Every structure is written in C-alpha cells, then in structure tokens.
Image 1 (cartoon, rainbow, N blue to C red):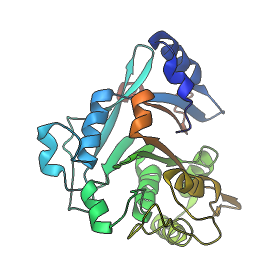
Image 2: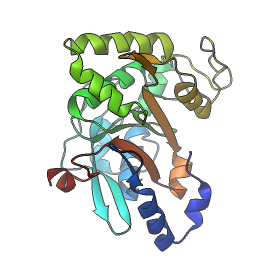
Image 3: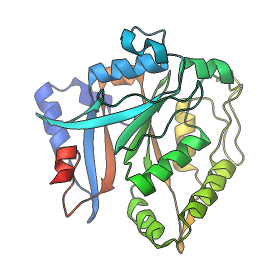
Length: 275
C-alpha cells in the first residue's frame, strides 16, 4: 500500500486530524479526498471473494460467483467512511462475470472460484474491468471502482491529471461508442495480462517490461509503464491503480482519490451532491 504504516500508530484523534488535513483542493477543478473503509463492510466484502473466510451467512449463496454492488460514502466525525450499500441488491450474472452498477463508488468481486477456474494465484483487474470502469466514468460519473479479490482490494480510478481533459474531450466526440471501442483495443494491446495459469513463482513477462512476480510488480506495470493514449492533441496516461492487501487493511483502511468539483465544492456523500 502507498499509505504509510506510521499513520496507523496514531491515536484516533490524530487520525481524524490527518484525514481533515488531507481533504483539500489540489487544483482549480480537481478535488482530493481521503476516505476509510468501514470495518464490518470490509469483512463482508472479503467473504464475498474468499469463502474460506468467516462471514455473514446471507452472502453464502453468492460465494462462488462474481458479484457487483454499490459502495456509499458517509460523513462522520473526523472524516468520511465507505460502506457496503446493503439497501442495494447485489448483482451477479454467472460464476465469472458481474453486472455494471451505476454509482459514484462501486465494486465487483473476483472470487476464489475464479482463481480455480483460471488456474491462477493472483486476481488483478481484467481488460474488461478497465473498459467497464472507463465507460462508467465517462457516461455515469463513476469516481472509483474496487475489485475485491482473495489477496486484497484493487482500487481503479482515472489518473488525476487526465480526469478533466478526458471528460472535456469525450464531450466533443460524436461517436462515443467508437472512442471506447478504440480504448478497449489499446488496453488489450498494452495493459492486458492474461491470468490463465499465472503462477507467482514463474511470473509473467509483458512486452517491453520486466517480469511480473507480485501484486506490486503489476501495480507498477499499470501505473508507471503505460503507453499513453491520444486524447485530443496530447498523449495522456488514463488509469490509476492502487492496491490494499487484507493485511494492510487491518492497519489502515484509508486511501485518497480525485474527482471533478461541482460548483466549486467537493461533494462526496449523496446529500452533499444534492446541495
């Protein structure tokens, strides 16, 4: 995790102060916020990805399937907390595929069953995950998407310096589906790593990059080695990926994210968006 472990040693009061200090504007039209997962929600999400974990029986029927759902932000003393929205029915199609969910913050799982099906030892986001998230960002104002896996939580977002140019460029395009299809091909050619038969011991060697032996190698590949995509008259990095392992989440459940301001303000909760 990019979050420093030293933060976890601070008192609850100091943590709240840290969250407040991190909640600030980092540009004219870009907001930077700090949010923390609710512990109970995390336990339920973990059970959905790994049925070897103890969990709530109400989700037992979904344990072998990819499911998707909403996450909801609430403002609480000291900062913002991210909850599993249990008022929203969890969606699933089949064992290895999940529905798109229209929400600012959402998730889907890569369950243990999918690891068995793909004969793989890590469950990073697939090509389709990136494109589905991009479509959600452009057409439904999705801010970030969490992929809940056996090893931890992958948090997908648009790179902070690309958010505004990408949104503005997309508004000018007449054939929007064609643009997303072209990015789909670009992701397939540059970012896609097939998880079938992936073993940590052997790793995977992408073209023009070092062999990937770990989650951190994969994160580095996505964030630091991306071929930039042509957006208007400039080539730009599109995606940002962060990873929080279950072990690190026991210590620190928080992360930063970026999004476009609304009327000069930085709303996070639904009530703030409605103002």
